[in-house]
Image (cartoon, rainbow over all chains, first blue to last red; front, side, top):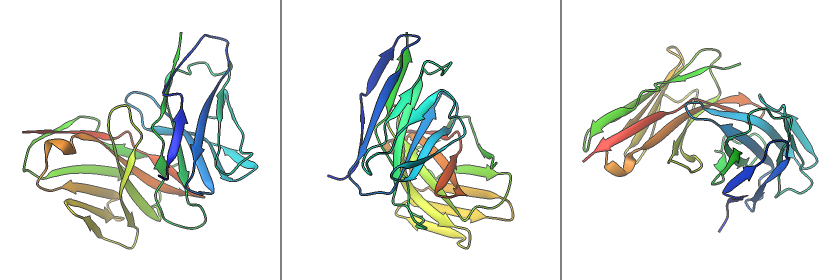
Length: 114
Length: 111
């Protein structure tokens, strides 16, 4: 089955720790995205990558870092510099190019800071 | 940047009725607009896409309209069912394969 996987589903972090959220896709999509979702708010873009070895900051990149060493993988690191990291994190992919196709989303990772 | 407004209050309707959800945007008209469904604790799922030169798009019981003059899209679910209960998100193209999402409207369909 083609799709996007995110792990873990639930993640608990102590203050001051960095944590890395995994995102893998087997859709052969060029573009990948990380969003953060808080209660009562829409999805906010953290980082996105349109091609391997290249990525751009989204609207709320501070305190986060990413890498795109492989087409199928786009891990997100939540650093200790992120002041309020407790949220639902969603990874998505898109075919890329000029297509008007939709974004495909993973099941999400819920991060809680203790 | 683009601002999107969706009704933050839940929409409660009875089974069999038509649900109508609204998405308003404030700036430039996007090349296309998308609607997604999101169930609690899960990722959004794509439903429909409508382009700026299309007035209406249909898929089974779903219909989307796009009025660039009013800067508004309407999302309709006809013959609604309890299984349609979910949050529905509107998303607009921002260029460079980026989308901006609304906060979503929660739909509750009662049997």
